[in-house]
Length: 260
Image 1: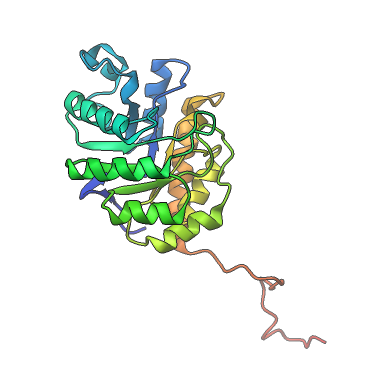
Image 2 (image 1 turned 90 degrees about the vertical axis):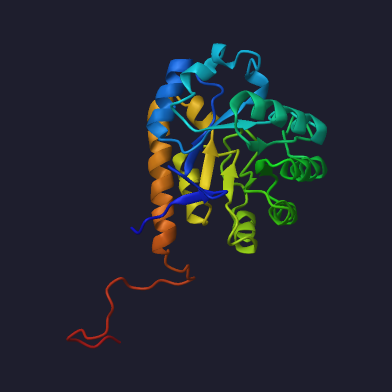
């Protein structure tokens, strides 16, 4: 397979599997799972940090070992998200931000109006914005057009483990945005889901709950890594077309007998 680096905002990332840091049974298991995943990015919620003394948080297990991506999880308005992003930039010395602005506490579905407003403000302030979005082709197009470094449509509601509910819609977003880094974020339940996301042509997947709440998070992290690699190779290889009839795997032409 030819060299296949993933570039976001001009920077090469080491892996197409990104992972989160919540819901693990212990910080030690979290670190071992991230290592098994060989994660390209590791997301951390700004709300979980002691921004006055970040070295006293679980970050002391992560800083210097993994590439961290702060996120604005838990925000309901553009102003809240921008405020947290500014805090993260100051505390972690990075202008990369995973932007989340949700509209409902039960579904955790992104609020398109507030999401677009926050993305616009953050880009104007020099942030590299990776935007968690609904699987809506129009919203994803607008996020890409305004300059988001990556657009991250959901597969299913956060933490639901439902897998990819609408692969055709994700494929449509990929078709409409052929040159934009796209990441499937939220809802992944199994390695099969991760492989499918990559087979659809997505550039990476972000997984948290499916790894953290597995019976064996470390083993699941490894399984997800292998699935992402397999799905990416399958995408490059090109699957056979689907047909509505059978085709013999051994052609009949040239056989020494005639068929009726």
